[in-house]
Image 1 (spheres, rainbow, N blue to C red):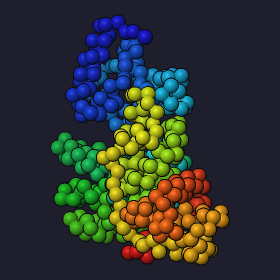
Image 2: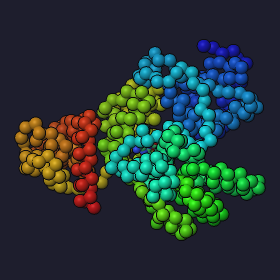
Image 3: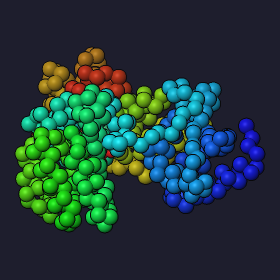
Image 4: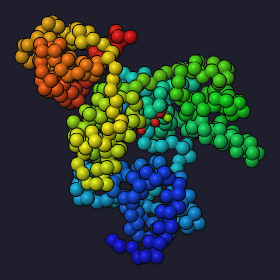
Length: 452
Ligand code: ADP
Ligand code: MG
């Protein structure tokens, strides 16, 4: 479809504005493939390659789009998305799209919650199951459990924001809260400063105190901001006394927040403080599988395995890697296979240190499988023994930095390619079998504990 040139000029003016407010690389990735297909009745319709693009752009660049629209047209203009048709998606191997052809922009909600964050799409693992259970309990009865405040802490990209917002979304959807407000501590700070400047403290209080559920994300940013802390402290007290729920997140244990007033810290202890740990291999696989399923992506199991085995620090990096692959696939139309994956993600992949000994691994697998460790080390080809041996070799590759040859030497002098094959089979079994995934996760955790 071609668009008359005066309209193209308007489009160009709009994209020039947009380009000013977005880093070059990101603009190229996300807005490069975007095309104007019509401009009618104050509505621009643009084409994007997939639902995924639409979601990503709306989630990350909504404010920039709004101001570019405002700057170019002076208000009154709308933007709609047209998502590429099915055939094209198939050509790009993106799988069928679940969305309708034309989608409107998302309206910002009063609660500032992003509907993408739900309990349903939060994958549970040993690393986060307690935090998730507590969050669920709070969202079912905000202000009515002993978990008030609920404080969730953990490193970057481990799912704090996801869980905190899932509480809000669940509570609103199931009407356990009439009103819920989500805010980052930075926004709370700016809102407060603006309210003071404009003499609008009452409006500010109305927003943050007149709610059944207040979620404040990343409270470590209150550090060093005395007046904001004080205001937050008052907000907290008002809500707490009224039996309203407060949910907080922070990126370190509360005890390490030395600069946050001790009275604020002691409030944390009134409720429940719980942490989220980095996900293990099995959880990483489950997260990737769920993401692929949600985005209707068909992912090669080798690619899932490679990502889960190599990107270990946090979920955000894992997602970032997946996004890089998807963006590449939808721009170039290339298939995402293991070769391309390795090439695209070279910079993200790290090596792991030695944690436990081969013998400890063999003994742990022997105990789990009820087979003598000697048999696991030996040459028997009996199915159950071979299976346990594959798992043991896989664990050696995960938990030690031994070379494949060296791993083989601990298992009846098997050669490099036999070890690769064994690890391969083990990983496929783990990916395909939830029980086995849980069990190997358990073995691994036991081993990691032993080695500490
Ligand atoms: P944090 O706030 O701890 O820095 P986020 O909540 O922003 O981390 O999580 C980073 C990304 O990883 C988000 O896109 C989130 O949806 C995703 N994520 C994190 N943990 C999980 C999980 N257990 N299951 C599914 N997705 C997750
Ligand atoms: Mg966060």
